[in-house]
Amino acid sequence: MTPMSSSPSVDRAVRAPADGRWTPRLVLLLVALAWPTQLLAAGGILGANAIPGVAQAFHTTQVAWFGLTLTLVSMLLTPFVIKLGDLYGKKRVMLAMTALGALGEALAALAGSFWLVLAGRAVAGCYGPFGALSFAAVRDVFPPRLVKPASGIMGSSVGLVALFSPFLAGWLVDHWGYRGVLWFLAAATAVACALIAFLVPETPRHAADSGFDWLGGLVLGGGLTSVVYAVGQAQSWGWTDTRTLGWLLAGAIALIAFFFVERASDHPILDLSVLRRRPVALALTAGGLAQTVAFTMPGLAILLALYPHIPGVSAGLGWTAHHNAVVSVSWNLVMFGTGLLISRALRHLDVRRIWCAGLAVMAVGYALVGVYHGTELQLIVTSCIANVGAGIVVAGAPALVVGVVSRDEQGLGSGMLNMLISLFGALVTAGAYAILAADSTVVDGTAFYLDTGYTWIFWLGSLVTVAALLLSLFIPRLREPEGESADGAEGGRPVEPQVP
Image 1 (cartoon, one colour):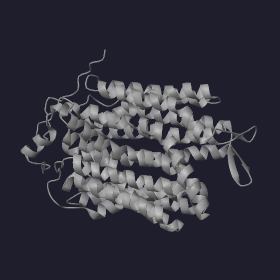
Image 2 (spheres, rainbow, N blue to C red):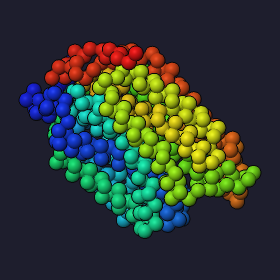
Image 3 (cartoon, rainbow, N blue to C red):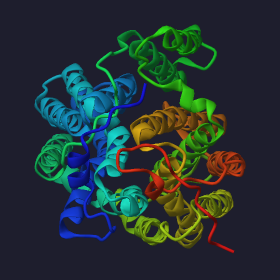
Image 4 (tube, one colour):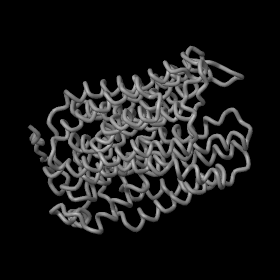
């Protein structure tokens, strides 16, 4: 059955002007979509800085759940969010998600016990899958010639977020503690809700009927959640503990069962047939692996910066959080600037070639970080090289997805990419901590990491990037969004390489 789109008159009103010129209205529209999308990244940085205050305020050893709760809820809800966006329009679903996000953070800020904090964070986790809709919405509401540049700007703006968030986090925590962070997130999410309400038009619906596969959504979300939960607990339980293996096994069984449930469903929550197309499977897997490295490696580098320097015990640099924020300005500016330049050039370049070039630079960069990270100058130079590649990756990934799926499949493709980033992110993070633990010294119950561990976690990022590059070499020529008709039907032509 052909997916349903909005009426032609509504569609033309949403996507005008057709000549691809930037207008004040389109700039505001981009801000309205980028603000809540990048607030997710800012929330991760701010939340990480709030964790020590939460642990001390409630005297808990389970503070890891402060962040893990959001990841679990987000993973569980992502397949439902994708389908609901196609059924009822992305704007309505985004409004509901941001409203729940603001409510959840406010509840956590008001909570008087740790478990109530987690309950609030669970409600706030409803906002987690926002990226699965926002990048898909770009294709619905922007003129075709601006889809790739707008998507690239949204992706690359994570560098700007990473630039200012550490300073903001320090100011909030120093003046108002962890509650200041939560109140800021509540207020910023409420602003996101208002921006969407007033600036984002309703998007076309891309589902032909109102059927909903609740069983498939629960099996898929539950399977992914089980895997992430097991990975998150493996550091405290142990990788060979029966609880870890049990949750991993349960997740694997659920994911296998999901394929059979979807085949028998009249209204599958995810159209798995798209993964039978080689370009889609390759682009999503490579995009998930590459963005996982771009998003997780900087967070792991904070361990190197903030852990103390104790010869023979701890190979950290011993920086303060403020000093780390000042030094990291260099490579975050490089990431943002590179992404912005690439976003402007995507209309004129072969996306595959610039994407593969970015992966190669990022792989070389993190290999160098693994060797040269002992001083400020070494870390600045090597991290800037890595972030040139990372800037290309975060700007090019949305354009990569646009080039392998149709307009009606954009929400599905973006949602699958977000799920893979979350899943790969949990696995890479757990692997990195396992590497660090294998080369650590425990003093008074606290693990301190030696230099070999830091070297290998950066090399892990390089190796994962190489895997993404090898997959990307087999991605065929991409389709231009301009090649689609106004009603969303596929008629796209491949992107002809324009780079010698």
